Length: 340
Image (cartoon, rainbow, N blue to C red; front, top):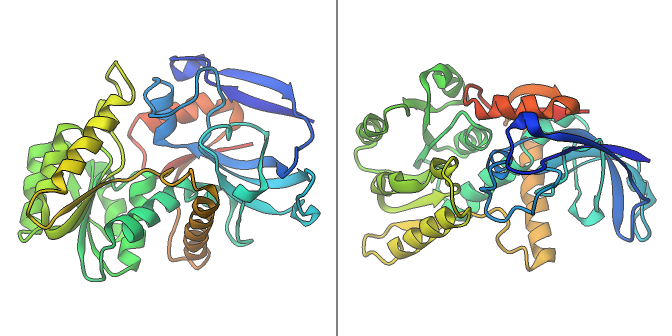
């Protein structure tokens, strides 16, 4: 079998991506061969092409943080009944390929009534949103939260999960996305003027909020921290503010982590967390169980119509460069999806 792959050869513009065709061997012990039905563009790929993702592999490599696909072959030790069934998996790299191999233990079943594109949209984004809301912040019903970048893939999912859990959501986005946020149940605030944005949020929640979910990082973390009421939680899960800066890719993350750690020692009853999707990976079995449980919950909500995946656009694999360019334009709401 052959596979078509999109390769990031180095720090290049999307137009510099390469297409590679190579032979795919039979799956090894514990592995499956997956035919890609949908993959996507996450913020990680936007950082990776700049060499700015915290622990990305050395160039060249095949990007693709998550994937939904159909099993076409199984290796020794894997149940043959998996062939022909559809699964989602979070893999960090390798998803931008027509076929790929991965461990069967990483597969999470996708309900029949959920399309491949819909499942892909909530794979890494849904797990991230679910874990930040229910495992990191643990906001109770009736609470108020702030979601920065609420029109994005993680943000739009987080808004819906929070509304389903009975929370009030203040979401930031450019004005063109405000109607979408209202439809999802959030109170929109324009983020183009940060000083005005934080002032408006304080007017909407004068007693403070129960949680802020901040993917921006950088100096504005101080402003997000200040929005919290006593007992509130700041969840930082990215450093978008430094995406285009040159230098060490790990430094912005380490700076944010250090700042958040110190804030937890302040006597104000507030908490600060740096969310990492891959936290606990060294305990691989428990990590996989937790990921599968959380993604299964999100996919169940999609199947029930509680969560509507926000698909910004779909591109064929051969046009992955255009898909990334659109995602980086910051003009879309939801996630850009790549299909065969």
